[in-house]
Image 1 (cartoon, one colour):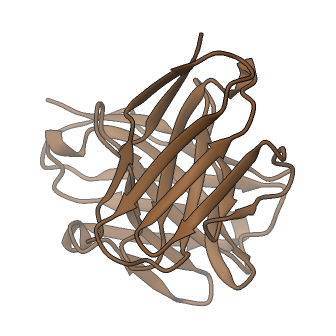
Image 2 (spheres, rainbow over the protein chains, first blue to last red; image 1 turned 180 degrees about the vertical axis):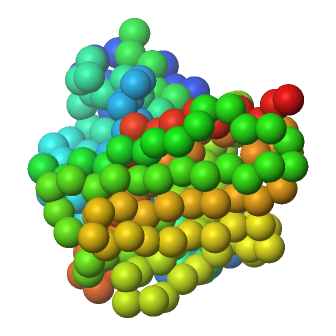
Length: 107
Length: 120
């Protein structure tokens, strides 16, 4: 199965700063990659699909890029409510697999 | 607004069967894929399986021999059975809906998750 490696494991930034989260796939997955946000006590929320397309209602400060094996989620200007764990998911090959997550801390 | 809610026993004995149900409100169970995902404590998320009401089913090869998924369209519910459980099956279990986004299926709505502990 495809392994997704997310870096860094933890990211600590201040409001207004730019966050860059990475996800690397062990095999080519084309653009079949999604990003999810999971806030404490809440269900995961779909942010980005097809590597770069924002899901309905997602603020423009969230953007995704990449294809093949290397992907990036960028939050252009952090808000305090962006405190969460962010996961990438590949759905290019079954079984779909997730990265281990990046925990975003807001200073 | 679509809402998914997992339900079932929070404690299962080793070698027994883990059974969970996901109840969907705010939408029909038809025309989507429905997925079970789990996360053991301190570990990553794992897709267990997915199915559509048209009959298409995919199980994770690592669990395929022990897993069954079923649907009750009259109740807008679907279920998961995992047989012969061990402590390694202790996890938070999530149900999720997959919808088509520009032709590709992605999980967009998830339940809150339910913790199932395997212990005697």
